[in-house]
Length: 171
Image (cartoon, rainbow, N blue to C red; front, top):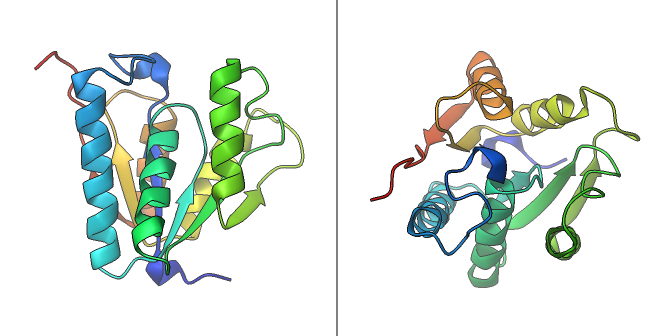
């Protein structure tokens, strides 16, 4: 079991809630990716070595890519894919399914949180990550949903939060 004290997890929005949707060349998306990479680097400098990712479309995959890039420079980093159910990526576009598959395979650990899809498996995945971490990095725009739920759960569990507010307007 990896230590909660050196573990960091992530929460953030899916493309449907992002102003740039799937356009990762958008300046706001590129800025967020840089801020995620900076937050991951800062977490590493503070002693975090294990990173948990929920592997959802959008911000989760940005986070996973940032941690995998950090691992290339810092071999003591480990990455855990916290997969909510086996069918998580089945309905995604083919390019996103391939990206997901590639990223899960690159992770050091894969934890399947629910053996099958249920209406609550995503929240169960979020609780699993928070319960196994002492730091949560969040890309949040203030709207209700899974990211807000995960942040509230982290607060209730006294997990520290680094908030990376989303820039909603065109700069």
